[in-house]
Image 1: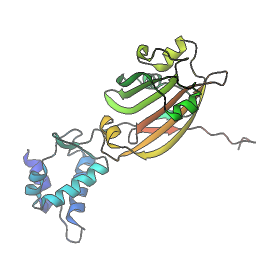
Image 2 (image 1 turned 90 degrees about the vertical axis):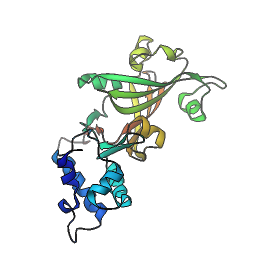
Image 3 (image 1 turned 45 degrees about the vertical axis):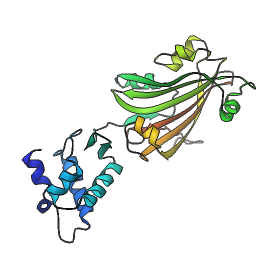
Image 4 (image 1 turned 90 degrees about the horizontal axis):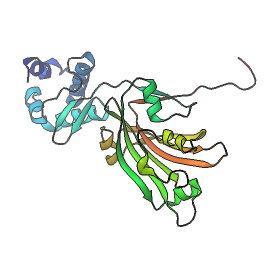
Length: 256
């Protein structure tokens, strides 16, 4: 630990009379240090015990301040690894007017794309999959689930379900599902998406390397062939701190 860090955390440098509860003042002081660059992305913070000793306040007060910073996405807490300043993320803008794959989208931005397979194979379908995809009774559904990373930062969890008529070989899908479907002559040409805000559950938050209950985006997409037949049903979770969706709107009946 550097002398600068010890001095920065000393209570005399941040505790102001009438400045509010101690945990609020400590939280604000650490946030200011992060935003000013005094604490760098990825830099480890002292343990709760060390923070309490340096600041001269109780561990309970320190814990409240750190938990508040974690909920705001300014620090990351990992069991066994301690607390560190959250990495700086450049938000990804994705158009809602074009149907592109994650691989295509990230390649256009010059990012290195990588996927971690979570599930890939043929399964008994859920009731929802049967209804949306129009599956036959007692049939199977092809599922591929992936953690999608760009420049080694996890951005999204994609869980796609397809009829085995369109994807009989999910284990052969490589980097792009749409490229694979295109090779089979069944790439979708349009889709309907529903987007809603969610709090990420513990499992998804761990995969996306964010805090439990962190803000996320849930996107449900149904994709269609030119014939109008449903080809894909995808349920995805995106990091709320890394994605922005952009839509161009046209005003009907005029050019104003």
